[in-house]
Image 1 (cartoon, rainbow, N blue to C red):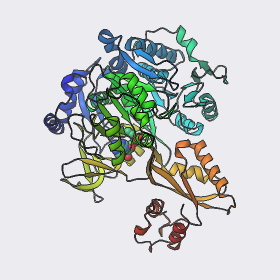
Image 2 (cartoon, protein in one colour; image 1 turned 180 degrees about the vertical axis):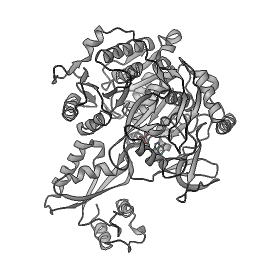
Image 3 (spheres, rainbow, N blue to C red; image 1 turned 90 degrees about the vertical axis):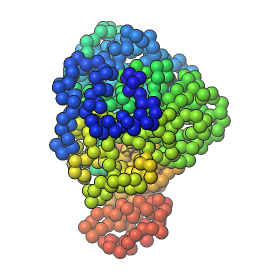
Image 4 (tube, rainbow, N blue to C red; image 1 turned 135 degrees about the vertical axis):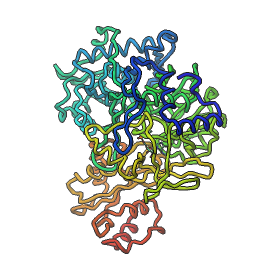
Length: 634
Ligand code: WTA
């Protein structure tokens, strides 16, 4: 992204912002025109609207995103490091992958995929730890026009098979195992179990990471290394239409199965590249590190596509923040002279409670920008981050966005927007937020609070839910007319800054992970002794929110702890350990409305210990149950 597109001061921001609202299409056209390589130009900049939900950007254009993320950098900066790989074990060597080397490895991998019969439009599942092959296989799919569906390698076999089946992936890329701190995890075993339920998978490509002896099913499974050794390092890019899907990424909904959000090629590229350049104020020799996993949208947009489209150096870290000790992040910053550091509030809170000596041992003076993403950052964590990591010298960008938005939507621009803790501050150019009340009215002016919507399409918006456009319409465009509904609540303060106030639906953000209550309840209800369950969130010092389950049983038990373990075991198997409940209260009933709906509002308050303020419970079908639950709360 050209320097001219980097906003340098507040006055310029307001000027550009106004222009982007008045002439949104012209605004994005100039960015697209001047910053990317196109095989063919678009015929229309934008078409469609939130009413018809058929949004298209840059229709008629042809491109390949890997030409933009790799090939075009080779001439001038082929030897520059594209990816720095920091292994789990600090004694293992850091790997510097140059753009030249990345190009060769992506092309080789792309050729293997082709050999295995993968063609444009086919879905490829990627279930890998944070090793270079993860970024490489993502880009290899994009090279040949295959649609990647990365599944976070912490998900269970059942969660994996649901995702594979939903988008009918033909091939899966995995590894024998992964390292996480002191643990090793046998990923291939999880894949084998998942594949018992997936008839669509024809081939399994296995990367060797931990030298494990694993089951290899002949005819189906193959090690990647020998194939790579033989493959050519030249693979012509598949020329894609602007609106061809680039990837599917699953995110939890408040009900039902996970939603496979589909992102397009051109719009997503333009949006992630532009936002990366501005929000991290990335300059040529900076070393940027985002600690997310590529299994989440943050990793897709701000480890892989956004940074590489800018010719940046991006770090991939395989490990965890507390291995070998709580100083690991700070050690990596010092060692690589990281300039921009992007992480999640849950990590900040976990590290802030450890001894400061873990921080003080390291020279963090290379840092220029600190980022936060995934959930609201509370004031205490913000201050700790600012004082101890940024030494009050690095602005914090509290970036609000979603899997569905493709890229950052509301965030300070560092050195441009004055920051206030807990405020994501101002929308990026091209983004038009609205705060709505429950009567479908947009609340004008400042000092208002309501549901956060977006009024005008932006290039990065997900175009559909894989296989279920109707659900896409229902979820995002039916609550408010002609608006994209985010599912988040927000406030606008006296100077027009936005503060996110949390989900207004049944999604709970635990340690930055979106968890829908319904799938967890479905899992719990499979226990033979569970009659009914309701999950709510409650504030947690490290995780932001944790899960509290109210469960009614078919038969009473004299071993509640055993039952609690069994229930968490089912959740771990069906979803993954991230969805385990912190507290489980067995109860003889759940508060219900006269129409039989569980009153989660009351349960939420009880779990959060706000019992003095339960509101009117007399209209409930069974008001007496409320006292009973309060008496026995955990
Ligand atoms: C929440 C992650 C407050 C929000 C990029 C959103 C935030 C959901 C912030 C999306 C923030 C994300 N402040 N809340 N800075 N960033 N959220 O899809 O509730 O994993 O709707 O995307 O995380 O989570 P997702």
